[in-house]
Length: 487
Image (cartoon, rainbow, N blue to C red; front, side, top):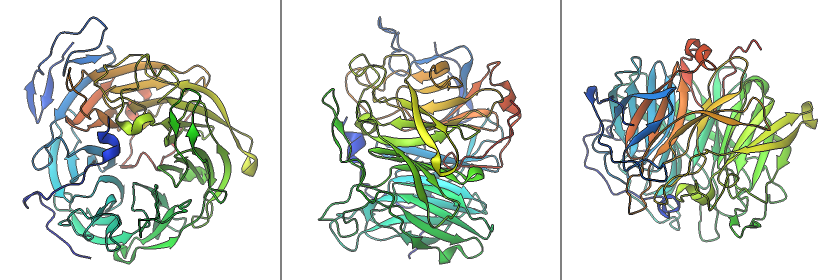
């Protein structure tokens, strides 16, 4: 492993762009700590906000924004996923990651930036450790690597590990190579508190890819000794789909359905030893009481409306799972009349039964009720629970569809209760942008916008006021904590 400086002063290397994504009333706010008012254009006759105009429900408002800073301020330096620790938000970027101090949500500030290209650079934290996913083939595992063809057997992809005990100066300490790289990663704590396990999701093998050979119906599990993180290694590669999973095909409306060749995202619910897997063509429920031998106990498919099972979220009692369909890979404008309310949406499933007899029972779909412009990429994406008592409420990113807060207490009748969005990046051309992830952390919503940087939103609704008192020192949306719920 080679190390490199972790401050953002080196020259910016070439980046490899994710081709799947590339396919397709303004309030005052804090921008970098300065009170400004964003430019706004008139709302058009369809009700769609104008370019960069902010539209929102009365109960959700923006209180701060920090734009992307050099060297992450280009259109190809996408802001990606987030994790939180000790009042700080860590935001991935295709070129590295950024650490923000959000202890005063109205005045967030950048603490450090780490230049380390290798998209998507999804992040997970545990204690003093940060885990960074690299899913683009690189010349080596360093932060000064260059793009390399995936057909080259020496190309590197996998997990990078940083020491963040000093948030102002993260230190690169180790790397672990994994088959097909690491598109996303999920932290599952060990039962002895001496180790953590990183469940690595990756997909899309091909015969001409020496490090990503088919079949790839598995995940990679990395064991990380907390006192000796440099000794992290892959310790298991369990096969989740011995029958090959969903074969893919064509949905009734003529759109393509992904075949299962791995998982896109896994969400752990450690308090119940469960993981929900969104695996391209399949949704799965997994028992992880044995961390190294996960067992699929239930599997569902939607061969009518789902195109690509992308991510999953449990409710707080572990009796429901929300699966998202990332129709178009995040690059299509699917929030319109053409695709309707059931495509590129969330699927709500109740978990019924107990033990190995648990079943996922479909109840309904949810999709934001506002149509977006045909230049706006929009589809269901990453979100988390709003930790309230008596209701199942989720905040969720929809790319240029913005941020939606919705109630699924009644699984068959979900409804939106708040929203915030910007108008399109352009009125004439399709540009990839919008909220990649929107998570609730310690009383506020944080949104990682692909192009606009970090947004902080304040949700003020009678149904969610109890969430203001819930505090987490550490929060990974894909490692769901179970908060006390006195229903």
